[in-house]
Length: 147
Image (cartoon, rainbow, N blue to C red; front, side, top):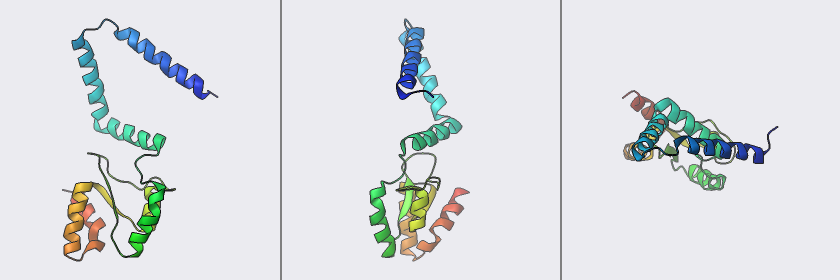
């Protein structure tokens, strides 16, 4: 089994090898490499895989477990609580449980915004609140997914 120190040493060694490989490149060559790397990351399937890996590795992407008490209180008072994303692509998916995880939030009664950004989810929620139709939020999200 690799120790953390050995894993870090291997990563540093690979980074130094990469630095040696581009040593002496012109700024134009470096710009081309960085642009290519950026586009490789932005490509949708890679972007999603990297985003999922980031959430899996860091635990980020969920609300802090300390927010559960407030969420529970709001839901118990009949207030709609919607979980939405701030990222451009990806959405909110019930994958992780535990403190702050979306699975746990759903168990508490949080409404999922699916693919909608936070701004779009907020507008939809306002429209549904105005028409006394908050219970149709997730149906509306599904309908909008096809647009």
